[in-house]
Length: 219
Image 1: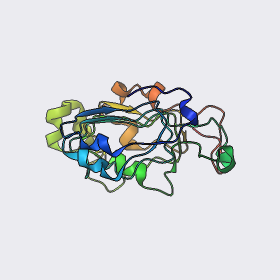
Image 2 (image 1 turned 90 degrees about the vertical axis):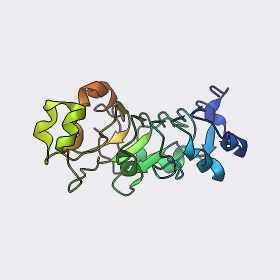
Image 3 (image 1 turned 120 degrees about the vertical axis):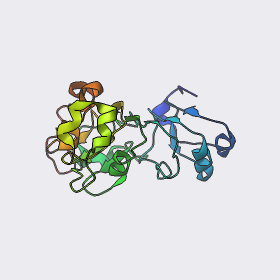
């Protein structure tokens, strides 16, 4: 289900019937105007492998979308959930009475951090939302081991016991055009698949000429 006229003006609650499709593996409801998922959406957890909810009107990442609820999920696309366009997050509360789109502050919430700890994910898209704060460093988390050399090759030898093992199976990571600030953590800067993710396009550039809720320039 893709494409709705005047998408940004709509506030659609996904019907419960979708979650009764017991063999569903790939669900795409994009640019539709969705604002919520039904309580029984978790019933898709035994089969769903790909979920694309890009370009909708969610104001937050749905709580039901977790690795515990969807153990078979490999692809998650929550990009471009902006109902309106602003460049100053200090104005977010008055920019649109229906909300501005997916907003979260990583300095105050663990919702994005939980997605980064979803080891089974192979594709994750969070681009063009209103995500601010600093990327977590994951200091103290388990690091790459000798077993990882079998997957990544000898080039990962240097990371054994040093680099936090975050998103080890990720083939496509898109977090650009948000409102993030601060240093790039080592797990991302030196990730074995960094070059495959197109970092100069899909990670490093945040929303140009914009400020976060503290009035600081993003990037």
